[in-house]
Image 1 (spheres, rainbow, N blue to C red):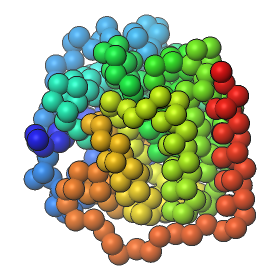
Image 2 (cartoon, helix red, strand yellow; image 1 turned 90 degrees about the vertical axis):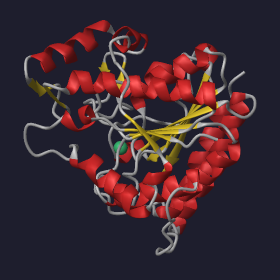
Image 3 (spheres, protein in one colour; image 1 turned 180 degrees about the horizontal axis):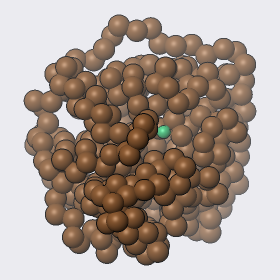
Image 4 (tube, protein in one colour; image 1 turned 135 degrees about the vertical axis):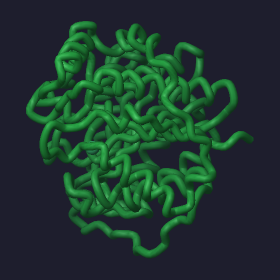
Length: 351
Ligand SMILES: [Zn+2]
């Protein structure tokens, strides 16, 4: 079997903030160095982003033209802020297209050759909705174009059973908004309780609309959830997702954020390498090619969570074994059970 692909491109580093910002190119340097130190890199075949011209038109499947032109114009003018959180510079527009071109190429490789991929790219995309900020969110949360949503639709067009799994700390509200009425894609999103963190959406009852009702699953993790609660929610919610999918997926698109790692800086989850290994083991068991797209992760999560995930998913590099799994307080367990009950009701209530 051909080795997994690692998409990496100079453009992914050239989207740079004008001043101090938590989301910058050093994140990719941190991630890449962590993979190198774990010994994972030789197991990948590296590939630059493929040509991006054709992607421009494809983006209109997931974004309104007015939004795409807004990003392009701001970028061509030298950059600025789209909102309080989200910057654009001269290279942002091209970098956003390059991310989408890479994810689409990764899907093609998955379909044609059964290959898995890691798209080590930025700007991130899972908060980007059809018109920009999604589902009433105050900002785009550092995101520009939603490559995962586009790739999911393209994979569904090929007749594949598509599972999107988002385990970033934050709700993938852009992805959910774009796919909300798309019945062919099941989207499972695990995230910190939206009443306690940006973007404020991702409730169990937000389960899709029309024919797509019951295909969007929001598994809500209370603040201070440890590896135990995370893994429990993952197992229960994944089973529901597979039911909604009507079987095992043909392809899995992962919006991989490592900002739920304890001490990564933006949230209140208490996850360690054990949680990310647990995700990877379950994905592996499903047997379908996995296209992993980097979303969040700002410090420790990239240094430790990412290599642990890759080691467990692809058998590349040494898994870290130097930390104990975290245990959640009783009150967190109780809340998590309640959130799960709501999720089950939301999915069951659908025809
Ligand atoms: Zn995040």
